[in-house]
Length: 252
Image (cartoon, rainbow, N blue to C red; front, side, top):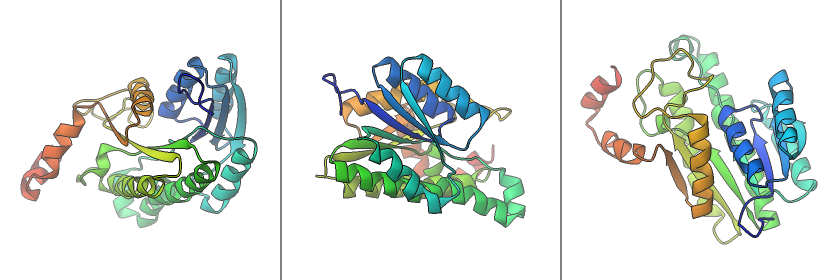
């Protein structure tokens, strides 16, 4: 349960080696979150993440979780909740893909969609059901501004985030009155492993800044968080640009 300061005491991180997810977990542990469940594919990075959070003072458990293996999500998430209430579920997994390659190889595009969208559908719904049953808690879903309007250079990735974003919004509405809630986070370009080597976009941010925004949004009870906040107004304008104009801008 939340402590006297309203801080979550337990965290389930889906995407246990995610840079944004781990930046958020570090902040939460420093603010007295005591139980952390890291769910991800077994790897040296996942083990290192568990060791780091343990050293910070958390009781950490690691669970094998493959975002693409949707048949296993309900079982994995169910086992975590069976061990005790979870105050916060952070859905932080995702893959960027290679736009030009994936256009030529449709099954590669399907693989991106399987992780980003189908994996999000199964794990978000399973988490929401568990939160509803326990009567409290928050599901934070990492979306992206890429889902706000499809661009030529990343429309496959953007389409998966658009679907995930719509799902999360509807899921939040479905949980009203249950004691549980959903918060959607829409970062812009995040400097990190996923974007390494890519030209930096305007209003770029960092995993640490996204983590700060997540914690601020949770404290405020926000339904949607933009990172940085100025992107809310930028995207409001871009969303209504005539398509020929937007096409020219997004091609630059």
